[in-house]
Every structure is written in structure tokens, then in C-alpha cells.
Amino acid sequence: MNFIYKYYFMPVNAPNEYYLAEEKYKNAKTRDEKIKYLQEMISLLPRHHGSEKLLMELKKRLSKLKEQKESKPSRSSVSIKKEGAAQICLVGLVNSGKSTLLKKMTNVDVEIDHHPYTTLKPVVGMMKYEDVWIQVIEIPSTFEPEWMAIVRNCDLIIKVIDGDYDLNKQRNELKKILDENRIKIKSIKIITKRPLNLDKIKNEIWSNLNIIRIYTKTQGKDPEKDPIIFKGKATVRDVVKEVHKEFLKHFRFARIWGKSVKFPGAQVGLDHQLKDGDIIQIYA
Ligand SMILES: Nc1nc2c(ncn2[C@@H]2O[C@H](COP(=O)(O)OP(=O)(O)OP(=O)(O)O)[C@@H](O)[C@H]2O)c(=O)[nH]1
Ligand SMILES: [Mg+2]
Image (cartoon, rainbow, N blue to C red; front, side):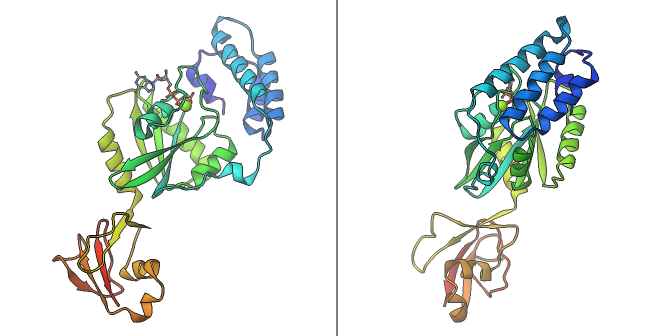
């Protein structure tokens, strides 16, 4: 995947060996391997004006890697524990503005810099949407297999497209990367480095997550503040099971207030399909 460098830097006319080393570097699983191939890349890179910037970046990466303690890849380091109502991943080419977007969405303290590859490990933030939290993860643009495993497991991908560069080229590159990693997860696009309407983005994310929030209530009381969260679809049966499995045996009917019924407090059975925001009172 040579495009990352080719795309952002002047052509360096590197020999094929350089790109082979780069490929090995990208596929390297351990820090030692990465260091080895990065050193190879540095030694193979021709020295001229057009390659200065790239050389500097490679050296910066090498010193960062050397500073890092060797950590054995383990399953626990691969997955990030899901928190909140959903997990979404910011996937974009290097320097496209992922960290800046993450900070705007979640206020997390993340390093933002004009140097490429500032983010080398996934960064997690929590974004509030109305009364729920959504976990947002920046995926490093090295697209290493362990990071792509996180993407494969998330609920929605945000393709981060740099508004300063060729949009189509980036879309194609991202599609290629996701295809290569056999990732078929629903995605939306955000173009960065342009005026950003955060509320609009949050609404778009929410509507693509297909999350259903259901608020239970008991007679004469206000609905619970914290909703029960369902993905995709939810019936009264799902809610009853969630509240207490025993209730299923004694279930008589439920009353619903919200979008799934024609009038407030309508009486429904176990198979009734609920909608986001519905309030339910169970009679058992
Ligand atoms: N003017 C402007 N600059 C931006 C915007 N978003 C990002 N940048 C700049 O673009 C550069 C890269 O931003 P980051 O947010 O670090 O990008 P990234 O995709 O996280 O970068 P890596 O982690 O290195 O892949 C920084 O210099 C940012 O200040 C934006 O909306 N407007
Ligand atoms: Mg970043």
C-alpha cells in the first residue's frame, strides 16, 4: 500500500526494494519487525530534495517505535471494550483530520499535529447524543490488522475524507483498504477541513445506527431516565425479557406512549414492534 506516502509526498523515485520493505513494514506484527523494516526503508530511500520530508517522517516514526516498550500482541490489546450505546470508528488516510474530528465529537485529549502518523494507536472518546453515549475510536492510518479487527467489530464506520485533497481518490483508497480487510460494515462520510455542522453529523450517525431506546415506566410514575438499548428491532417481548424473564409467563398486555402507536397509552401485545423513544408500561 504505497499510496500513503506517494499520495502525500512528492515523488521520491524510490527503488522497488524500498516499496517491498514498506509492504513488509505494514504487515509486521511486532515492534522489532517494524523497526527492522523501517530501518531498511530509511536506508533504501534515495537522498534528494524531494525525499527530505519523507525521510524526516520515517526517522520520526523510528524513534517513536524505539521509545515504545515491546508489547506482545494479545487478544485483549486487539479489541476495545464496547461502552455506551454503540461503537463507531473513524477511518481515514493519514493526516486527514481524524484526531481533530474525534476531539470535536468527544472532547477527548488527543494529539493533533501536521506531521503524518501522529496517531499510532487507537484513541477512544465518548460522544453524548441526547441521553446516550456513543463510543468513537480513531483508527491509526497504518491500517494494521489489529486496528482493522476493531473496525470489523464496530457498529458504524465514519470515512474521514480530507477536504483539501482529491475526494474521489481518497474514497477509492478507503474502499480498497476496507475491501482488502473484508470489512462490510455500514459507513458514512465526513469531509474535514471545511465548515463542520456537529449537530448534523451527530444526527446522521444516530440515524445510521438503528438504535432503539425504550423507556420503561411503572403506573403513576415518570418513565425511567436511562433507556434500554436495542439494535435494529425491538418488540414488547424483547423488553419484557430484558426487564425480567419471569414477567413473560405472567404478561397480560403493555401500554405504549410514542411513535409506534396511533394514540398515547395504546394497549399492545408481546409481538408489537417498538420505535426509538417509546415509553412502555408492562401489565403482568
Ligand atoms: N484548518 C483546518 N485544519 C485541520 C482541520 N482538521 C485537521 N486539520 C489539520 O490537519 C492536520 C492533521 O490533523 P489531525 O487531526 O492530526 O489528523 P489525523 O488524521 O488524526 O492525522 P494522523 O493521526 O497523523 O493520521 C493538523 O495540522 C490539523 O490542525 C480542520 O478542520 N481545519
Ligand atoms: Mg490522528
